[in-house]
Image (cartoon, rainbow, N blue to C red; front, side):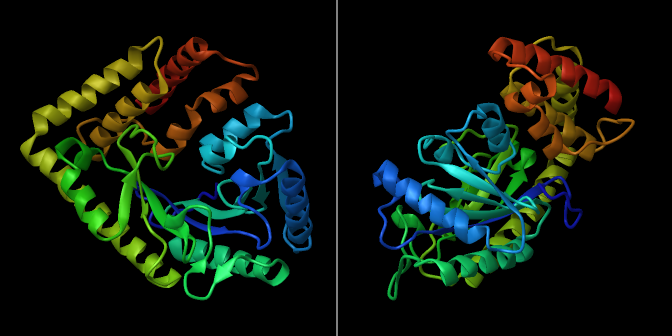
Amino acid sequence: MKNNDKHNDQILLTSRIRLARNIAGYPYPSAMSDEEAKELTEKIVDVLHKRDDVWTFHRLDADRPLQNFYDLEENRISTQLMSNKEHGGYFIGENDETIMVMEEDHLRMQDMRKGFYLDEEYENMKNLAHYFEEHLPISYDKRLGYLTACPTNVGTGLRAGCMMHLPALDTLGIDQLARSITRMGFVLRGMRGEGSKIIGHVYQISNERTLGLSEEEFLERAKSIAEEVTALERVKRKEMYLDHLIELEDMARRSYGILRNARIITYEEAMLHLSHMKLGIELSVLAPKKDFDFYDVMIDLGRAHLQMERGSFLDEKSSNIYRANKVRKFIKEVF
């Protein structure tokens, strides 16, 4: 993922634009035969390789399962794509953009970056979508807009959103915020999107529907909501410090102690305590020798990343032991 500094504060971790498109004359991926999927994939590969930039295509049915899970943890691809191993694949661009092929739709184009880059991501994906429209017959209805497998994506096919670290809001109560966001047509989800758990107080915020507004209007609304949620999280952090200091210190120091001494730890538990510890550092109740990037650590502690680092398969228990060893070393470096 592109590592940028713009607005990269440790609340708003990443931003992402995703566009869904389908090719006219073919069924949606869930209804495609092997022959249809192969034919359309070859067309897409041929079209994309005519561009001047470089795109590398990876098939899910190739013998590289660990790399696929690694890219899933990097948020390059989705769990939905991973479930279509027979037909699915994905491109990675020279600037780390991704195009998922035969996910829920024929094409899912996304640009995701650390920081707050929705405008730049949108321009990049809009240009890519226009390129496909110039070379392939895209499914489009004059009244409805772009046609997609799921009705909630019909219209613009655009998802605009951010991944945010919201420990204060989550601790003091996030239900009211969730209801307010829903009224604006947006939704709070876990870090892997729809149906995923909330881990380490990390949320995705994105538009729930893609019909009724233009792409630019959805984009502006996403930017406004992300900035408002960031400001509200800062208010709640100040409230925690002023009104709940003992509880804050206990939470941060307890998490530090667990991470410093754990001999076996799951990903979910590690993320929860890293979140508390990061909040303690941000609010000056913990004094590290150096700070750390929460998103980077969150990604590096995933099971596939541990296995790539180790160079061998790790079962669940071995992963939890290896993760604990890595975390203890990390704590010594930070403190």
